[in-house]
Image 1 (cartoon, helix red, strand yellow):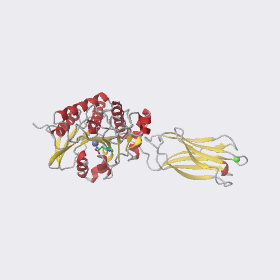
Image 2 (cartoon, protein in one colour):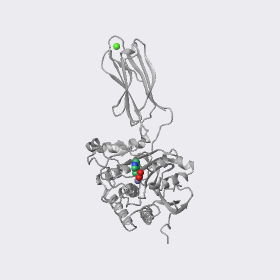
Image 3 (cartoon, helix red, strand yellow):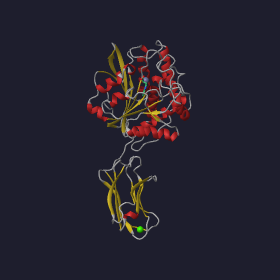
Image 4 (cartoon, helix red, strand yellow):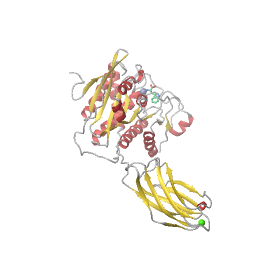
Length: 433
Ligand code: TRP
Ligand code: ZN
Ligand code: CA
């Protein structure tokens, strides 16, 4: 009996990625982001040790067209099938040999909003490929298994992918996207790529691509107090490029390949001024070629991103207004006063084009400093004593508030900084575009 038989399908040349319905509705968490799990680095390392054994038993590598590659696919697939995934092996041909992608769909979620995470599973022929890219493959696998353990039911649909023949030019991932109809491509709202995330002399690099994905990863590392840098060691050198090329928003993490860590980077991350991975593409890329701390942090970052990016965001209907029309007297050359509105029922962040309507009756607007205060206290200056003796401010300001959580109390703060002329706040309103 073929290892491919069973609940899953073997697909050749057709598009892969129809979304299965949830088996049991109501389980787990829907809507707002649930707390992401702490991924066990012990479990991730066990997967790495299993991939090492596969290489050892198959001529020392897991490369395209070699027995160790197919054994790697079978290994990952068996874990996902046992965890309740709908798995598909997509076959392609390259260099006269058969290659395989493995796609795993977690049942449920909105089929029109797919969050996909992936890693290449092939190694080069010269070694077992444990950092490149057992590390990404094992961490994505463990995240998928954590989804199953939590019986996580996010708003969006979750998909995971393991790519073949990346080392020969992103062959498997290109094959996958090329065989996806454009309607299916447009349902993928984000593709997260993990290639080399346990480098032995690690840096913490975030891809500079989709701003939301990038910010999500940065937020995770900021929470740990670990500084990150933008990935620059060869943009387009991994499978995210296949998705980016067809217009899918992408992001990802990386701990460095053959490039040398600078002394400034050693200052911030520790390690030595040598290659991030001295065993890159060589026979010593074994289970000894992993920094456990980097593998642990990056694995947790994957789960954090998968949990947060798959949560629903409720955007209010276009033109929703939150307004306060109570008058507030502005004391002459005195203390600042505020008018407040409470935004509720909006999950996620405020828009990049929040319309802030300010109506202040005053006889000399050159006296006035006017600020918008976000719920967390961030200050956006709207007016700073310009306009001289002009009467009244009755204006709509556009504010990029996309780094602010939308829900909460927003304030218009007005201070009159010079004597004689006086006035009052007539109204303050926020309009969601
Ligand atoms: N698999 C990639 C390669 O062999 C590794 C790599 C190098 C990489 N630079 C990168 C992965 C930048 C992501 C981002 O070329
Ligand atoms: Zn790689
Ligand atoms: Ca005044």
